Length: 360
Image 1: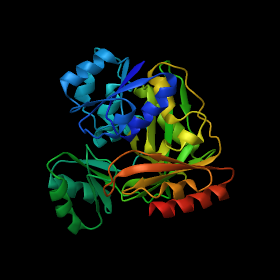
Image 2: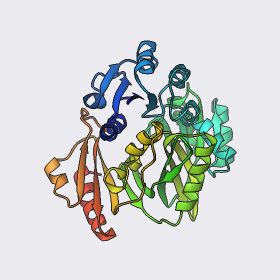
Image 3: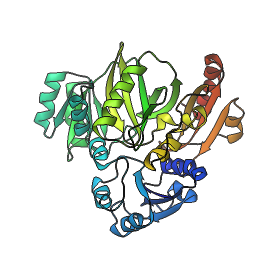
């Protein structure tokens, strides 16, 4: 079986590694000659909308998926008449535009922070007058890992933020005084079978995820799963989907969805019966889904901007290291470690050691 993957980053790399034991080979399309998935499959070096390479994928692969939501929907629409695209085109059309995403949440009764479309400076002033400050001004598309957004704390911040981000459609979102950030990772098979992983509790710095911890039997799990289930059904979804949420009191507000495997689910590689990557491959290929049950207390730490000494990472009990084979630069995710423990105290101690090595 051959899976075509639009994108050749670390998520594509880990999908290919998960597919290898299943007899799956991967064909990647990415504009970067040094895309880190190159060592685990065949890399086609070209833009995501290159018709020659899209034609090759349609001819050689059995199914197509994608590793991030900034892939042009037009590329998937080009492929869809000739080869199965999973998840479907509508999922990426929604997820790559924050306005459409929030509109879908509202349609499905999934609570969100207040939001408003911003096309002009007058729109921004009107939205701020309605929802107040602080608030966050974001580009509607191409935002990732904290990029394309500015926090507005005072009226004097508006002009500079608008000047910096304007020229593309924007959205203003109300500030959320959350007590924590969580995400739910769900998977839906070709015949509609749905499974959920235990909730992930997440910590971000500068808009970049630095730590995720599995939270089995968390009190808000049922609420998070209900919201994800609504999205899966509405989109006729096939594959892994992540829904990021803010917890405010005992309620959850949806932040954004990702129609793909997700950074906050990396702990599942060693921490669950079946990783999110293997289950995504199973789902898009029409294979039975694997168990999403957690094996132990598990967490993940990202290494951003630099990689610590592998011997120091692996000296932490219960730890597994994943290196992405990417050139270092500030803010870039270069690898991660998962850690598993028999009890919460042991996990917390190991996490402290890993966080000190990650400099975050």
